[in-house]
Length: 109
Image (cartoon, rainbow, N blue to C red; front, side, top):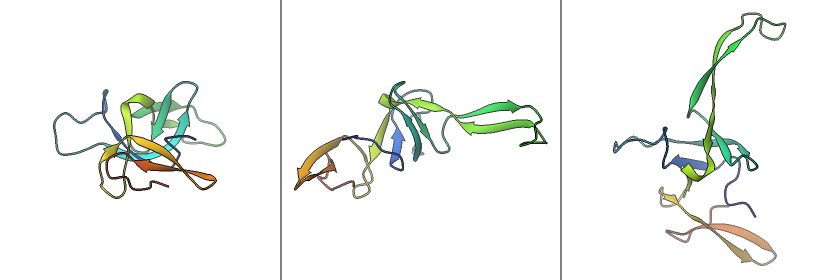
């Protein structure tokens, strides 16, 4: 079972996108996970600019901002109950496996 899934809210803990001792935390929703490269795309974080040529799909062309990728090791899942970044554990409940918060023991799924 995966410890991080698309749609989870994550917080950046390290790297260029991490907040430097400020109250504003960098959080966002996971849009895409590339497990092979060990990267994750988070909504609204690490915005990169791409220059688009004029085509039939985009007749304007121009510069477009889109989210870049962040290393998987630099983000942590945020627990909905305690609202803190946490490590994720996996527990078998019946035949299904459930993810839980290691801080408050609440279920994430």
